Image (cartoon, rainbow, N blue to C red; front, side, top):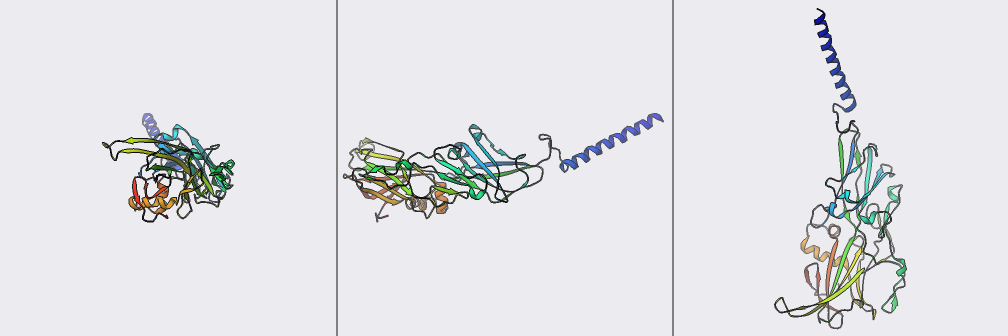
Length: 356
């Protein structure tokens, strides 16, 4: 009898222990135990993607080397900022961990990314730190260039940029919910690139070499400041100058095409965001005479190529997806523009009306 009584007591004790374990699991984690974390607090993770490019492929790991993330609450206040750069961004599955740093609630996520978003860089400065409406990104210019001699005259005082700009990317989410629910919650930010490389090639039809100090290459617009939503804010005109100019000649034999001597001059510029409807002027000027050899609206030139190959994109999408623009112009024996032909990317344009 005693042995049977002890056996029944042990069975009851096991049942009570099992019930207690189940009750604790239900009370602490709605029926689930996270062995890897040891608790049931929600996990908030932010990922990035850069596939808003013409290849439509995610190039985040290859191109973006720094992130600058702001978490903004429903009152417009910045409640958390995360900055990071280096090799970790290239790791497969890179993410920012916000659990334990941001409480459940309603937020917006703002990201300025790339080396142009790093504190102390020489291209852009992110301004504001307390509220969403105060956050903007400003181009760092070279004011000392105002009054620089060009063509025997002087440039108008103003805002100039002569550097190869560091890359800059942006995204702002709509309001998102960080729920008070166990499990992993992911938020992916698809980035837009805000910097553009422009290459100008001048090819001399006469074959004589072109002095790399003969021409000035500039792009003039007013895109020196972008708001938190990436829209342009009012800004004085910005004159972007070529940061590198070089050239050379090549002798072509009949075996490879039309025989002759070909010479060209190549100028590289980088500039900020292109927005449809903005006045963006590309100018090529003779330094010795001040004569304007070529002047045209750059966005109109760029969109000529878009209409032939990327009809599925809106104009603004194309300007956001494209980040490299290549234009080739031809000079006659007087170093003036031969107005009938240009190349945009690899597309040959024959102009019926040279007054673009």
